[in-house]
Length: 360
Image 1: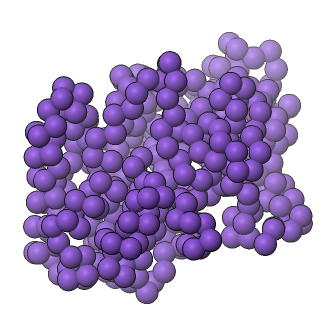
Image 2: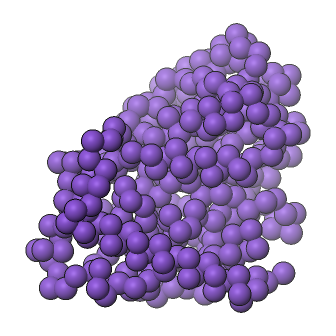
């Protein structure tokens, strides 16, 4: 069923108003981030607060460049309006040189509090404990899953996992050593599950979820809800997980990263043939699917293109950043009356090269 025009227009109006608010914040000398204040002074002959009245007007700005987030000083990204608040810094995967960094104050908590509302209590029982079987270290994911558990009244256990080491092993052709490291991570998870019987909810990447289920029964260990995300999430894995791995546990597939936050999954519908369909947390973030050769051109629904991300929070403003992902453009639904994406997977060209995904 198509979404009504009134609903679509209301979502668009809310997004345009949010864009105005965020642009006003980041380019105001009293509240803005040093990076954007200096950018306007050095690169623009006009005031974005005067000319950007909605989302489409963000095309007046240059596309956000990858290199701007590599290296320091990271304090140039902290808005003056948030000075004095505790600041986190999180990094991207780091598989392509110096990692990109993003400062956070409360964004990751807000993202996961909203995501929590999409999880059914029947399978993610309030008060239940969680296991985080995914990357730790300088990424936001471990803290975010821990916050999700706390919001839902639980405690989160975590393994110690460094995916950058796995990537190095794979690039050197040390596949047996990489597999030993994967088993080391699974050993930690199984030790936690054996020692703490209150764990009912699990976050895992696809490869680690499959590896865990090769060694134990989720049902026997009491796992009723699985939150899963990573670059190896495919329709084939989705079907395999539901039919072979989960033993009745709820499967919440997600797409997220340090720069966007967390996109929610479309509720499961057999008619989608196990496609992985996500909707970004608009108006805090927007995903466009664009022609890789002309990123100003949005492709049609069902067509394939490169994901272009815009992040719009008071902590972080990132207009029209070309992600290292391709996907199909998905139409709005009643629950999320804005564009979504289908079957996200790594994008490669002569500049990005190959992508080594390791334990994900």
